[in-house]
Length: 455
Image 1 (tube, rainbow, N blue to C red):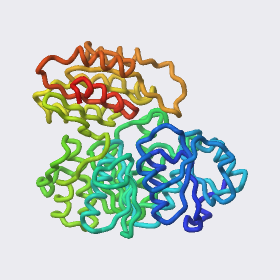
Image 2: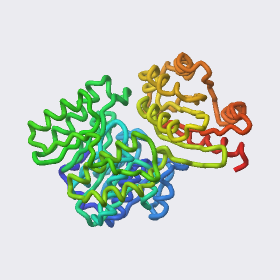
Image 3: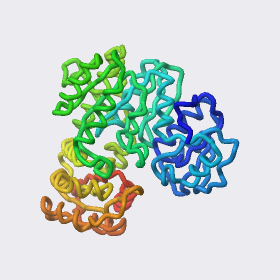
Image 4: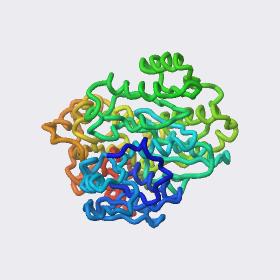
């Protein structure tokens, strides 16, 4: 395979993305299209959250991964870790035809060299803080570019954008770009500013232990040039290590605290203590690159949030449906706490779909503890990753652990079982908030709840 370091992105006019509908890959497609490239790609025929944006830009998508769709007019192939990665038939065909094939991380890395790149990294809060910073810079008239890991950003037409300004704000993902090499996606980035929001062990399918997971973030900081800016959020043992390492590299390091300068932050349209902290991180980054405080606070006060992050889906006199992407125990706990505090007079029903068998097994005790503050708990089948090997761990094992903390928890095998369960929970004249949570497709189940009260 030809290495991207040997070739400049500017040389390519026709670019084909294998797995184009993924949130990251569709973001690349949008950016490349706005750069003036001819962009097309392939993916499954099923509906994706990114379909609307890709269709808006008239980006042609082939259904399936037939190798005969690859032809000599294509200057560059970009592929994701999904759909077999390098072993995808179209990627194999491209290599046979001597067409350069880059991974998602390699392509994003090349794009990051074209502007001053600000990377928002961390175990939790990346999507929201990236969107917040993009909103701040847009309102400041900086004409930023961005790539946000979410299908819909309420403040923007697209979750990715390429503009004339000097800054590129990118959600920096620690997940491996290619399961063969195991290299985290964010290590391809060429950055001038990095914010590490928090470090909380995750992705046990790829990182064998907490130390290996932390080392990914350590490498991200190590590759920064002297004079670059590092913003550190959550205060724990890992941040102390990063702080001292960064100082020895002569980086400009700022440790974020609940500083009085940001006490006047007012989030009108989103809620939750964790979102307030996300806003502080975005504010600090903006402050460090010279954005005035009044612009920062005004932009954040009008920030509308992002899809599947405490997203209020439907409201009636008695019922509220909220949807969230939380898939780690810390995120689940923060989400439940935020909803209970925001709606103290409502009964909270949490419908949780854990994401991946490896994560469910690794953190089963933590998930049980996090969800136990809900008034009612419904557990959907575990949503397996397409890249995950078959596990001996079962839905029954997970439910058993949840029930040790919340004995009234119930398993709902599908949408129909959920609707039957929620009917039994509803009491006349009682106010209920349904929280659908998980990184799979659990958001599709919530419509069953709204149908029950005629909306």
